Amino acid sequence: MWSIVLMGLAGLLAGGALSFRQQKKPLWTQIAFWVLAGMSLLAAYLLTLPAA
Image (cartoon, rainbow, N blue to C red; front, side, top):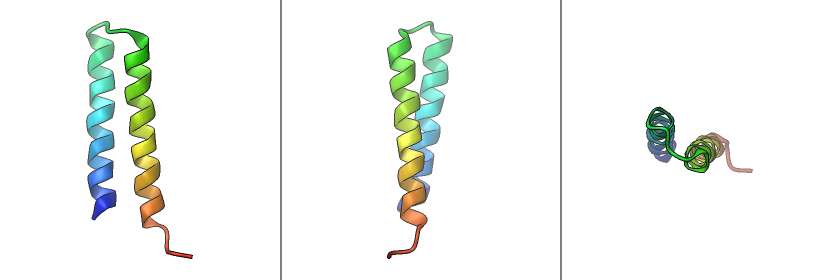
């Protein structure tokens, strides 16, 4: 369940990064949103792994 929520959050963050790019916002904000989106996808993936 949480992995789906995190994937949705990653989509929103990626959309925000693209929006900031279109609005000519500072590069650091775009990078921050892309990094957060990547971290969200990584967390979603890690939640799908079986417990050791």
